[in-house]
Length: 472
Image (cartoon, rainbow, N blue to C red; front, top):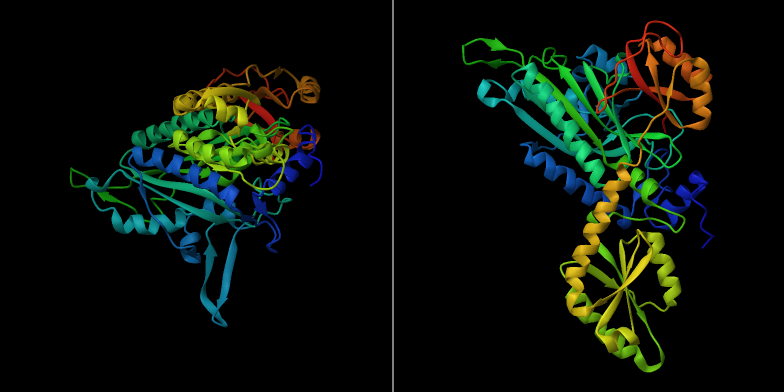
């Protein structure tokens, strides 16, 4: 195995870790797609369970819609098709024949859900309707693909929700923001929540909110989005309900997309170190391995003792590593794979009825009495979770640029800045070109600040204070 790259060389480090920690395989042969291996699927399954449980607590019901969307349905919402037309995969032939109507492979599922909403929603009693599905979506990504960060197939959860009033729909968006903020903090991911500029909204949305995870190199990765759709989909798809007063009304809707693949990429990137991965304990079904330290004739005694360790650690799962490698080689591999904990057992531990517990986050060891193991593991894991939360709040003060010169100067010193902005797409495009990729990400949601008089970039009247950063 090649030497592990230093994380300061983030690109090389990331590629090394995702392949050598046995997370994915890119040799499937279709550009922009990967094969997820068991180590990755363990984390992905945990992420799905985490977010689905939060959605179910809020009254969302799980559905599974077909992969295909009729082209006639897809083109019903004008802004939506305009926004996605260049990204869709389209099926024109099947069974050796041309199809009468092309089929779209879902890039997102508004145009799949809303024809069914028009059938299911008849009365005010049917509202609110809060749904979700956990699926893969497909977009013809024209930028350079990067495993888990940017691809043509990615895993996500998408909610589609219909409400009788604008107020209820917007309140649901606020609840989305609160829920996502809480979960990203728990996962230890530094993030910003921004309200996207009108020119940068989701196609068909009245308002778009993005959750930008902050990567170790300072670039941001959009891991989820929430959109207030108003009546932009309910109207064209003729979704209406009979109100209590006997009048037919058009409801309002929202959507939330949670990028499971990108959250996985963020977890790898943020928590990994020069030694490899670090998987947050709440996402690892196996909490770690047990490494026997064998000396002379102690082998049988140590292996027998390991079974007592397994029992005393329950309900936490630890896997004994009884392979022929040296303990050092096993330590090296366990750190690369990112197990939250490691238990070491040798002759000394057997004699003293103890175990040595190693924490992956702090890389420190503690000796624990076997009878106290479960209680001590509870304490350690809770402390690990607390440390994760602290890590998510690591971004404090964001420097502000007052004019074009300061924008250029600060971006050489800081990966993320804020500035007053005029709101014009042309201004944002000029900034991106002049700074080689830095973008107007949007207005901070959790700390709205009043704009100054002039746009820091072009000098025209400022409308908002926005975040500027480079994205993956």
